[in-house]
Image 1 (tube, rainbow, N blue to C red):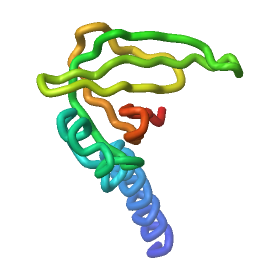
Image 2: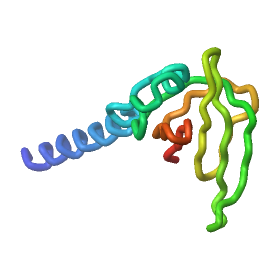
Image 3: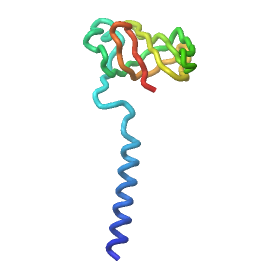
Length: 116
């Protein structure tokens, strides 16, 4: 009788562990929450780093790359500056909307590249 009870307990612990993993934050450990002004004034400090930025969406553009994949770009503005956001796929943001963007900052382009 002890073995089936132990098996049930291990199974339950596995399920709880998997559920806990699914509830972890989506951003990787080490992604820093920064302001647009930080990216604009110290771009080299954040180059090729995962960052999280809050701002207002403007100038949304969509296109297809040479492989036929959808792509998008928009400007992310706050009161202190503007950076570009570039990503593959379709975006569900709208002009004027306040959003949180997670991506890799590329200093040479002054842009965030999203990973979804």
